[in-house]
Image (cartoon, rainbow, N blue to C red):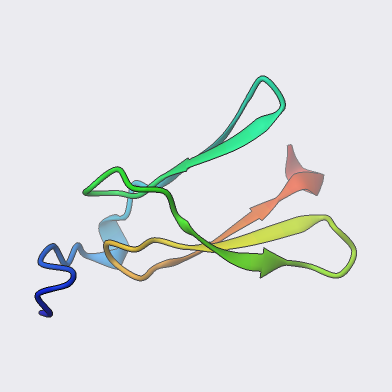
Amino acid sequence: MSAANPVQADPAKCTAKVRCDGGRITTESCTTKRPLIDDGGSSDGERDYYICPDCRKNITVDYREN
């Protein structure tokens, strides 16, 4: 573990959250509750990709399912 990120959560148990609050997307990591790392989106605009800074899990939000 590095000193920069002393918390290393288990990606299999990640509880990171992505939600829409009044038209604005907010994100929250699984352990430290920091914002997720924005890793871009799909070229068709139907998906956004995030990385949890606590456990490094890749998270995909598919707007076609919501």
